[in-house]
Length: 338
Image (cartoon, rainbow, N blue to C red; front, side, top):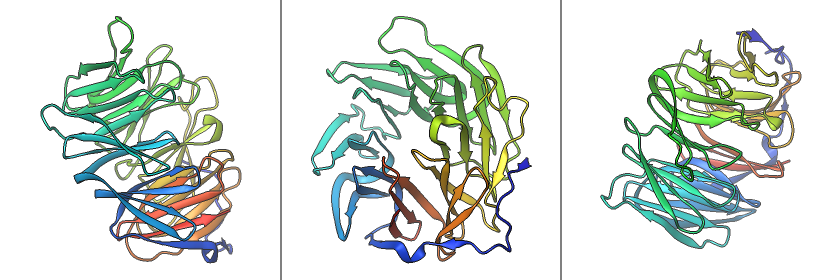
């Protein structure tokens, strides 16, 4: 993997740690999303926590463990081991989107820009339109991840040995992209040309959708648990190493035949990465609790949080890119205003 000329370890790093507002959580968070300028920290059990300025409020959304969460900027949708899929909006209004008939765990969820929602329980993926029409698809094995394509109602369903591309509003047979192994997280590029999965093994796998050509994306020392597209989709930033691995997607062939870049090396493993929504910048959290902001062009680094405590578990930007929220595995959390 090729070096992207990161700032040298001996260089003095600008710090903005004094501009972070502490957020007191009653329990560790596993994810964070924004509704406007309100950060929504998703707990491992029962509650989400709204944080804005100095106001912090817990909201009970499930009767047990929370297994998945996503947001479209208007609502945060969370699935739980109580068999329910629930959403909460910026005014704290809670809506039950679905209840599994067999009370199975809701372990994946995806939201489309038009209001369509998808979720999975076991081997079955479900889609419900804004009008309430519901359809389902049985995957070959337990669903590992869900993602809507940026254009049209096409759902990628990751599972063992590949990904199924399903058009729930059409009678066409779903398309199957095969690659042996267990596929978990799944994401489309913003231009709808590429699909990438994170795998149970320490690797990603990708396809160029025009011709289903494979993209082997290997070389990680650990499993990739976090993926984030840079502004405009030029890079896919990932965790899974002691640097942030950046795969280039600007050309028509994506990363085929190219080495990825490496930024922000540290004596710790990158655990979560979140790209800025408008600029070529990303935030990265590490296993030692460090958080950095990094400029992709030259690798310049800004320290957001010093190494302390448990690994960073969650990072998220608001839509304007003016707020960064974070949480660690031991429940420490904060908001940085830029």
